[in-house]
Length: 430
Ligand code: NCD
Ligand code: ZN
Ligand code: ZN
Image 1: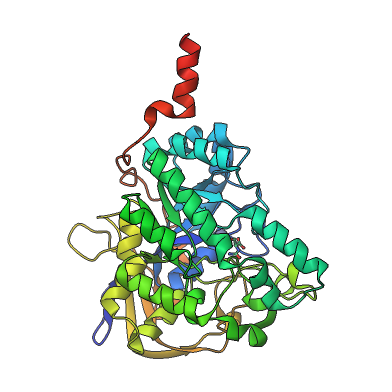
Image 2: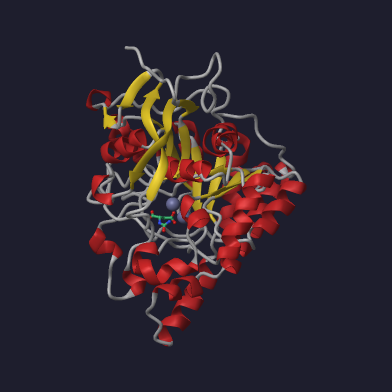
């Protein structure tokens, strides 16, 4: 097969470390076929899929169910295991069983998984640290949010902006600071997902300066939308954490440039239109699809001169590969790397229409937006999965779980002699 790429750009495929593909359990929202088809169409060649399915990915048996579901994938994938209050004794099994990373929901979000207490989190970090696997954090403090939402409901608030009031930036920043100190103590590698505020950047920067292996990601919605969009979008814009002030967005753009925020992820979180648009704001599901629109939305920013193409590739492919243990095989175009490629046409303009997206989540806050810069071909390990803006149906099942090189040497274990496991072992010997 030959390809005429004259006038086009060849980029490493995007590596999206934050997608929710909903299978098993919520396949009316998405499944592994529709989710990875959306990725292929969006120039994304590797995804890391989140554990808040039903059942959640909290044990080896549940990991096997997810691996079976993922066999339909068009693109390569990593699988997150859950770190929750009630599965601490399953974590080692998940590590040995082949998860690629962990996810810890510090605050409630879709799926209502039990947020671990700080005690359970600490033990979880101790268990995971020696594996070198990264722990991704939904960094919002459950107790603060529960209190504020209760107060807002008592006061009769039922407008989209009440969602922001229930989850102010301090909710996220407090969680980032707490997780960072646990990571520093245990040597665990952590990643702060979906950074939405200027306030989170302080604790993130401080922890990096102290040598903690902590990374941060943000999503197109926090870069491209702000509170002025709530009136227009209503409950469609509802996402955890919320889209905030224009000043937050400006600070996050700057933090990408100075390396405080390492990468762009999508938090691809599809729901049905009925689930997104409820009369009571507190009942509308949070999140929206993103894996198919990320590259066009961000290339449009390249076309507008807001970032360079080189910087975009750093945030979309190089940093995710490096930080999630896939470097040097994925995330770059050089001898020895996988041919995971997005070929993009920087002159092509498309209108985003949810009805035409391959995701089952047919609702997006970017509906009707015009974007210039489109991935026109996608290859995964040398094979076309998208060609000329069409999904290559025969590539269904080509996707593989990423393996082998993702186990990094552990970060420094500062307090290995004080982990709960080693203290219990010592008391056994007495
Ligand atoms: C996500 C989902 O729907 O799974 N929703 C969201 O608002 N971001 C969960 C999450 O990432 O918090
Ligand atoms: Zn989250
Ligand atoms: Zn998410």
